[in-house]
Length: 288
Image 1 (cartoon, helix red, strand yellow):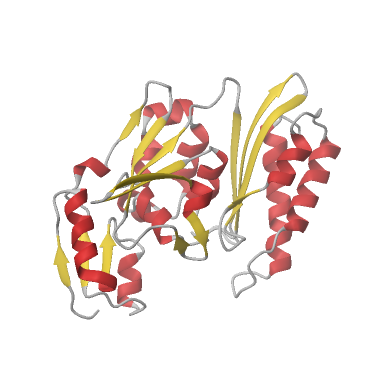
Image 2: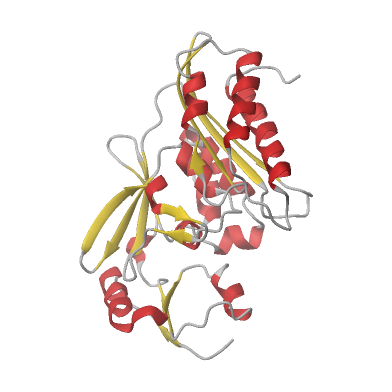
């Protein structure tokens, strides 16, 4: 690593002002699980690191009066996985966090740092998209709120301004009877970075799907909703044939990554398989 100044502001506003004053050479550091690796590999060479560790307002998990969830940006993945209310009311989210990466990352890495790093090969984005997440961005100038799909701009790129921080993630209360399933595909059991992720949240009345939110990640440059697939399900009686058709169409419409970890065709095939399995599980259909 090269030399840099390490700063520890006590408030969010102070951190933002530091970033505004110091310019493009600044990097914020939360858990550090991704940033430290890039520093060691000299992929980034900041003049200053601004630690967020002393800003307690960025921590914690709270339930709002409307039943929605607030997750502070510095909340560690292990805290989400083990939180009693999350496990009871957002089991898909808790299950995702419990499987993310490895124990070291889960106990040190933060949900906010994960989203801001915008690595496509990770778990939270697709899961949070399917749950209807919104994010609050803050600076010394004020705050603004975005849907997560507007925050995730592109490959390793977000909508954060140079002096902005991710303050919190907000999830709406799940409607009564909603079912969520999160699926991830790894090439080997020893690998920690998924090649494809699929998150599905559905509501059912009888055998008819009344609402569906489906998101895919890891296989594509940026996690994304699948509105065409959602439209194939909402308002229709669910059968094995319908979800097979839906999964095939959705996978075929993607433009997957094509790199050393997996070809575009392979990722597309794995998305189709994960979609089929997760939809079947969400709707309670037996696997064939």
